[in-house]
Each structure stands twice: as structure tokens, then as C-alpha cells.
Length: 65
Image (cartoon, rainbow, N blue to C red):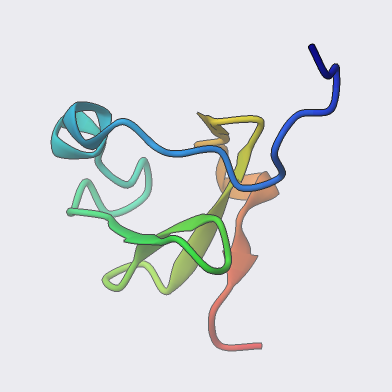
């Protein structure tokens, strides 16, 4: 068995249904290719690391950059 973890772990669809952006409290879209959760309202992209969404505004990438 390999100890290597997939960089793009699959995000549980049920988790996506309940998560909201901590800034706008709006819905999030899953960008599988970039492995991020996107808040169109806040213009932020939250990273997903080892299958865990990092929902901290200071960790998010600004989409306006």
C-alpha cells in the first residue's frame, strides 16, 4: 500500500451542500481542477488540502488578483 496521498482528493458532495463562505455566508462552487472552493460573492478561493477544505479567509486566494 502506498503512503502517497492524492493531491486532488475527492470532496464529499454532502460536505459541499452544508459549507458556506465564512465571509459572505453564500454558497461555494467546487473547482476540481484547481482543488478549491470558490465563493463568487466574496471573490475568494479556499484551498482544499488532503481532502480538507481550509475555510480561513487569510488562507483564501483573492480571485481579483
